[in-house]
Image (cartoon, rainbow, N blue to C red):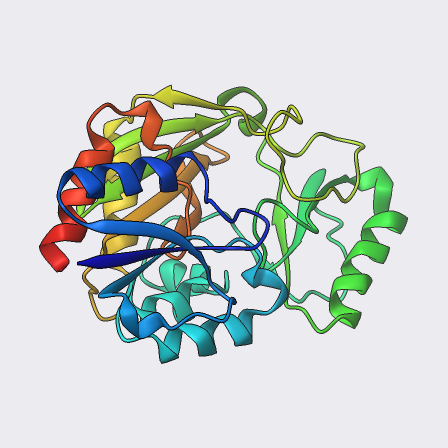
Length: 281
């Protein structure tokens, strides 16, 4: 049995998660290898493609989804990828009653009623093309918004939730439909830094540490997963929550396409994931 762990040219060998998963699958008698998603590859020789570190797809989302459509078998499945690679899925979650960060879509101007806010594109990864702005920075914020719009990208504007500065983000990882573990991501967007590039290891942004999920966080995460269209069979999922204005958790992102699963922060998680892959084979 052969499994391709889809990655990108910038990470030809994947990341720590990918290498750990390949080793755990080898222990189960499955040959697994990282394969660059847009390389000239005969994908039919793999029994299954598992999307992992395809983190450059945001530059070519249509091409990425067309590639996934051509695969014999892929997880998470293509309808999930199509729905989840554009953050407009947050509107579906909100319509289903899931608490999410308030979002204004393609606004005509920057907000005047929020002391701080975040502008970002709906298709993005690693906080690329994302910035935190204050009420005193309307000129550069307008330029940021206009630049995204002129590039034909859907623009999101959200209030910056100040609790993030102390609590960070909590990532809740699910494997095979069951909660596995949680991790804390330190704040990524510092005030006064403007538009920043992709978060890079060691750049001081978004440091990851192990965390313990609260009951309220898990409740919100389960509600978000229950709202995914067509109740798909998810191999993995990550729900990122932050404290809302009143301190209660709200969904910042629901990651079903290519999330980092922070497997090293939970002993045994990689074995559970490998066994879930084997079960699907």
